[in-house]
Amino acid sequence: VQLQASGGGLVQPGGSLRLSCAASGNIFRLATMAWYRQAPGKQRELVASITNDYSTNYADSVKGRFTISRDNIKNTLYLQMDNLKPEDTADYYCNLVHGGYGSLWGQGTQVTVSS
Image (cartoon, rainbow, N blue to C red; front, side, top):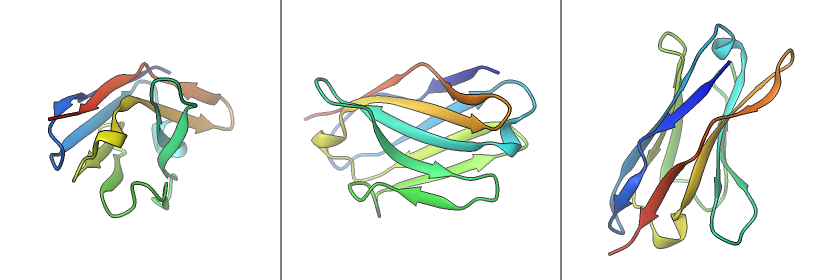
């Protein structure tokens, strides 16, 4: 199983970005998926997660601004980020958790929020 994240970039404060994470293999629909982020000099933190039955959870810092979703046909995880703030600047990583495979990580995609 491989995870390929994309969609990062440079955006002004108040702007929006949509991150995607494409998964290979056939376990995506059974897995809990999540987005994490790591800012320079800080620990990696959970941004949002979504279970295989579409239950979602968000960090307090992004509630009301970010939306996590998944497409089990396309094997793709999404993170819609609206009203971005400079403090959202970080490398964003997708994560897959499945009982038989443990915890898997994709490569990061960089998000920079700056004017």
